[in-house]
Image (cartoon, rainbow, N blue to C red; front, side, top):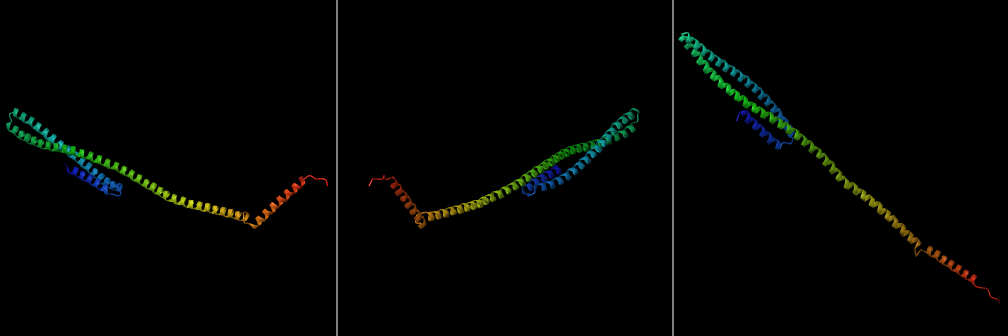
Length: 231
């Protein structure tokens, strides 16, 4: 596992650990994204340097390979011309070019593999960055939902606490009014009963007068109905 990948794994693990304890996950994620963005930029610069270096190695490998083939042709021509000494010199240069081309070919193959590994890790870093950015949006939405829920519950609690007290006070006031009305009604009823009821001398006198009047009227009517007789 490369150093870059180990650093990436440690960073992601640290983020998850801190997120579990953080009271402000969005701020923590923002800090992580800033560091991740800087790491991405550094990795992309390193990637470009590796690509440039690999291109240089490839060019030196191809140049040495071309020199090798050219010296081989020159040695063949010198040998055909009977110049064996020249052919030996050219073949020596051909062997040197061949060794050089092999060395640069190996370096170029290593550079290509490094580029592939780095490209894979870059894609992983970008995927991690996107995942964390998405988490930021998710946590931001959750925090907003929680904030709105808190406000809703706070208003509901105030309303629920106030309603019983409000209706309790209203119930007490109405009960007092009803009690007052009943008291006045009872007082008036008692007053009427005491004034007009039995035991009131004025009422008794008026009642006796009415009885006498009725008796007198009855007697008068009776006399008027008796027939007259001759004496």
